[in-house]
Length: 119
View 1 (cartoon, helix red, strand yellow):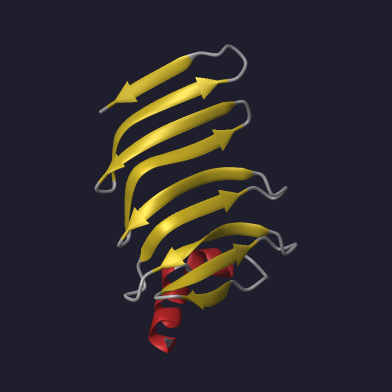
View 2: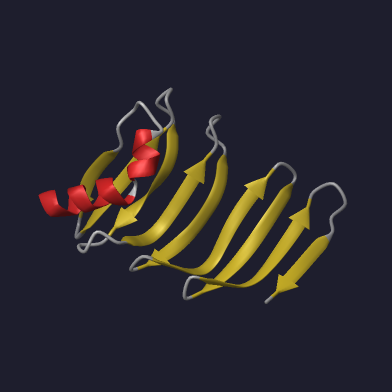
């Protein structure tokens, strides 16, 4: 367990160093739930690690007001499937295949336009 926590701390050292509030880690089944905070104590990111200390399962990111700005899945440290990113009046759906962007669809609330980018 100590090895996993040390690995996670190293993995996110830049995030940890940039904030005053230390992240929390709690065991849930065979995974560890990590929660990272803004300086005021509100949640910045939250997600899971597997036994090997790799990002695994759903991860969510929030802005300083608590509004969700990103959500997606990791599979053994690799971004996979659909990720969603919220920015002002836009929603972007990014499809990942083995950590690579396969395509991007963006919806704009102002003009209800869908823009689709494919690699």
